[in-house]
Each structure stands twice: as C-alpha cells, then as structure tokens.
Image 1 (cartoon, rainbow, N blue to C red):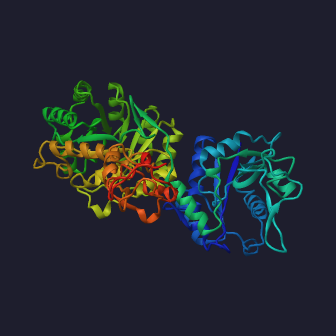
Image 2: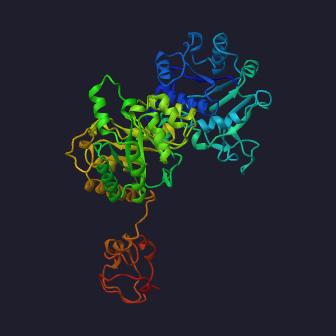
Image 3: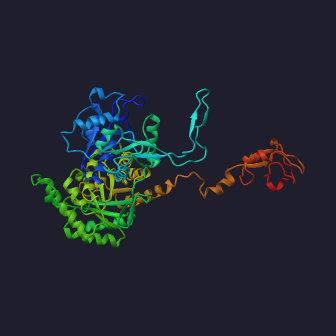
Length: 566
C-alpha cells in the first residue's frame, strides 16, 4: 500500500516550551519519531512510504530533515495555532500534496510526544489495519485498575467513587495513548477524526511504552525509563551478546602483524593467553580500497596486507586456542573470502559506515554485523542501519568509537553508548582507541556489551596502530579488570552479602544490661545499653522489652538474651 507517515510537530507548547525539540537520552522527540518511522518503513513496508514532518517551525523542519524526513512546506499561519486540530492539519497536508504524491492508501500518524514507542509497536498496529474491514486503528493502553475510578467533589475537594461504578475490578478498559494512529484518507476526510467509537480498532501497547510527554516530569520519567532499555540478544557463533551475558571482549590484532604471518600467529596466542573471547584481524585488497593516485597509502596497504590463504590458517589457530576468529573486511571481495572460510560474523570498520554498496553486500550474507561508528553522526548510523535492514536485516550490534589513535579521554564521550542503545535498540559496546585500560573498564561499568581493544606484541614496533595498542600483559590486566567489574555490578538488589553476616555479628550493636539486673526486676529503658557485639537482641527490639520481668540475673555490661526474660 502507498503510505504516508505523518509526524505532527508544532513549534509552540503551552506547558513545555519547544517541547518537540527537547531531548530524551540525547535525542530530540521529533528525531525519535522519525527514527521509529524509518525503521517501520524499512522493515515492514519495504521502504514504500513517505515520511513527512508537519510543522510550523523552521527549527523543527531542519531537525526533521537532518534525521531523514521530508518537510515539503511549513504550516500556514491559520493552521499553526493552539486551536487547530491535528486532523485539520493532516487533511490539509494530504490535499496540498495530492498532486505531488501517488494516491495514498494509508496514513500513519506518529506523535513525537511518545518517545518510548518502537517500530515494532507500529508494526503491530499495522497488522490490524485493513482499508476495507479495519480502516481505523490506534494504539491503546490498559488501565491498571479499571474499577478504581474516582471523582473530586467540587464543594470540598474530597474524592469519591464515580457514580455507577463498582469499587471492585470491572472489565478491562483502555485509553488512547497517542503513540500510533493508522487510517485511510477517506475515513479521515469523512469522519474528521482518527478515533470513531464502533469503527476504530485498538491495539494495546505495553504501559511502559505509553508515556506521553506533556510536562517536565514526563520528560524526566521517559529519560529514566529509556536508561533501562533492554536490547535484543545477538548470537555470534556460540556466544551471546547482550541480555545480561558477559561483555564480549575482542582482542583487535588488526594490522599489528606488520604483514608478517608469524607475527600474526603470535597475536592469536597473546589473545588466547589473555582470556579474550575473540581475536580479530583486518582483511583487504589494497587495490580495491586505496586510489592508485595515492602511492604512499597504497604502498603501506600492500606492505600490511596478508595473503588470502593466511586467514584460514589463522582461523584454525584461533579455534585451536578456543578463540573466536573474526576479521574486518574492507571491500566486497574480502567479505566474500571471509564468508568462504566460515567467519561467524562480520565486523564493519568505521570508515565503511557511509559505504552503502558495501553495507548491502555484507548484509545480504545474513550473518551478524558488528558495526563501528567512529567519525559518524547518529543520523549517519541510522542511515547505515536502514541499508542493513533493507538488504537482509541480519542481527546487528554497534560499537561506539573515536577514530583517533590514540583517542584522548575527553573526546571519548562514553555516554553515547546509552544514547545509541536507547534509540536503536541493539547491543552497544566500545571500540577503544585510548591509551591504557582505564576507559575500557569504565565502558563496561557503563553497560558496554562488547569491548574491542588493539593488541600488539611490542608497542615500539613500526606501524599506525601500535601506539594505541596493549601489550600482552596489559591485555591480561584488561580482561581481569573487566571481569571483576562485571562481577561487582551485581543484580542491583540492596541486601547484605553472605560474607557480611559474620562481620555484622561483631560490627553491629545489641542490647546489654546497663547495670546489674536481678531476678524479678522489671526492665526499664534505662536498664538497656547498646554495645558490641551484635549477636544478641537487636536494638530495634528495645521497646517491646520494656516492662518484661527477668528470670535470671544479668551482670552490668553483659549481653541480654531472650532466655533471661520471662
């Protein structure tokens, strides 16, 4: 069906100024709507949709275009006020574009104020849409306690049960959450409404994805919820990435073999002895990567390239050392070579994220793609994912990366991992080009699900990557610190560790006799004192003990026990 996806985004807002340009987890509300629309259009509509931001604001129009939406015109002043309904604007949009677009079968409206809505939610609504039988579909949310409906009395402000409604649970009820509306142009023109009782079909969304931004509090809540975004699990060979699995650590041998295959095998051993999960090289044909006019760069590429048959040998060596073998292809022929020897996934280098033919070629192979994002803006990352989805849609994980060797800590922006995860819903890690191991450990503490770090046998060797690489002992230290950091993160439940229970017996205080207490004495609060050890009656039980009679003598300073009391 020919579909128009409309994102209505007025510049003004009474309660939250410039609401549609405000950011949640580093991405504006209008941008999040455009990204969800693009993913839905690519994965469900196979790209057969026009995504349009309908706005009266030059700033919002610029933001929409930056993220890949069309803004064919700005709303005229008479349709830009608070009193103008969304329906009027959408109908005006369709009429004005009638001579520019093919006849439209469906209109999908996505409010920017629903930042937790995902493409899969739009797809679920689309599955229920039928121009003939269900021409109007909206997303709805179930009320948590449909029977507990209260109203406020005008005379004194008190609450009472709404008339005619039982206090007990009633049949489930829903409200339209504003995230997704789908209809036909004919339905819209006839009814001048997206929701018509008796005609509109509701599709429930998860409550946690139904937040509608109207206040600063809503914005803060959405930000907090997106910080807890769960991402799909990606399986690479027999390893799991994401879903609570240990961080997948890749020892990046790259071109640190300097073209020497024996040195390359030494890097495999170093990665295995360090405890890495995988060792990764780079595979390229210099003639297909570098212009012949750049003689110095071409010469360096020829010097650093390994012979094609070396990669099968390195893969066998890695498997023998219980390592996953990976290599980064830089051209289509190299991707074909790696596919032929059975690599379980493809690592895409940062420099190729803006190479659509290459991304499409690799995506069509159907294997997981681990994509580095150095030098890329977030809209460029979205562009790359659109290409991957359109050409086979294999599983994807992303690396945040700073393509500088070495990368300065102040440029590393590790929080960008959380931004990408919350927007793109894929596992995200850190390809670390900084010096030392500090930022790699920090990234894992911040939730990196993959970690890549260059390894060299000797940092003083000539070559472009050695300076930002770790020597074998440092790689071992990195792996050890990463695993310790992951173990330290725990499950987030605040409770005493088992090992603390022994400490608590001497570090805490319990009730002791403040003076010599005789048989028959009735306890007063002044008879009690809190002293170590904590193996007796807890301090919290002091109140109930007052007024009880002693059945045994307790010397001053002695631990009070339950057996001492009647």
